[in-house]
Image (tube, rainbow, N blue to C red):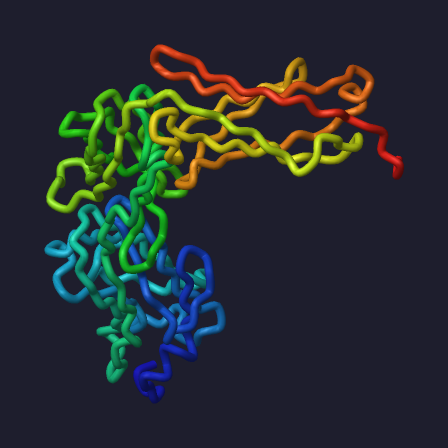
Length: 325
């Protein structure tokens, strides 16, 4: 059928591209791959006059050379594939087996069909994997405290979270156990600090320590704390909540103490944990129940545990009937 006039529009008129079963317009095609990932590129041609034409076999081509990029394809790049009678689509399984960070361009050709131009370009990129951020819950903490750190692993430039990436961790120059990113791209490390001073927490991609993410952690000696408790009112109706606030200060300097762990105890009714902020303040929220009303009074305690001491401060609240119940 080479006598039928063809042009660059022939591809747009006869073939509808899909990426991983999702229809995409030719101008919007862009393939992002990561090492170990596979993408299905499909051409659907259900109503094409080219089906069954002996001159219509087509091939998928890659520039630059696929092998140098770390790209593989099934069927292979450059292999002719027939549009046989009874078929309405063809699929190429494209995978990357190494992270090169390199762009590439794909296109289809129909070399046996006289005058048929190449298809529109299908650009793409083999993405880099990087640690986007590192954060921890206790950048200022105390000897013996536990620190929880999280690193976010993303593909660049798409910004997709990358699961299954192994990260190496060190704290104060000492190795910590490796961890692996989850489906959200988050890898975690939990460790206990033992030495006073400023220390670096570092995380890097396994086998590549050239560009680690670094978080400075300040570890203080936990001095004896003074706890001051306050509330807006000492009565709380059943079914309502009341915030109990605490101010933590050094017993020596009266300066606010940041990052101190406070164990809250609602006598007979439960407990809570919070940490003081940069102003030395923290709080807990108490929900008054019918049982608390029936068994007055309600005792609230705040405890700070140090290596060799425990400081406690308590207050009494009264749970009263709720006029609206």
